[in-house]
Image 1 (cartoon, rainbow, N blue to C red):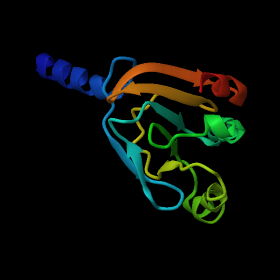
Image 2: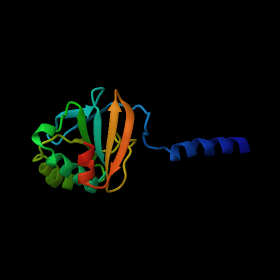
Image 3: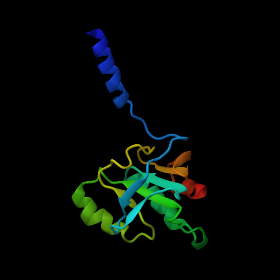
Image 4: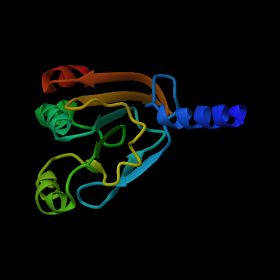
Length: 153
């Protein structure tokens, strides 16, 4: 009986300790819709994945991308910005946030349920830059300012 209880506890602890992707892990392809309801995703060509888990992290990424000069323009073929908006009330998202996002000069993949991005590394109120090579994570950096993110881009 103790062995069964031990096995069950060990089994559930593994689920409770689910972690984020780390350097060296392979990221699964991500397919989402952007603010215009166009398909956007992480694929084998993606080299930079920008990720925000909340509004403050999103503001950091937005400020950095809006600051890029014409010759440093956001290359959506190799760079993807994904935001977890699952924590946002749906009415706010539908009538306020997403209409505001439509004015931005770059696409944002919107994870409305939080499932597609649950394994992506991120910290509250910060932006994450994940460097990829054919789905393999080769670098993860966390930023608390748009200036530091801009330098990394």
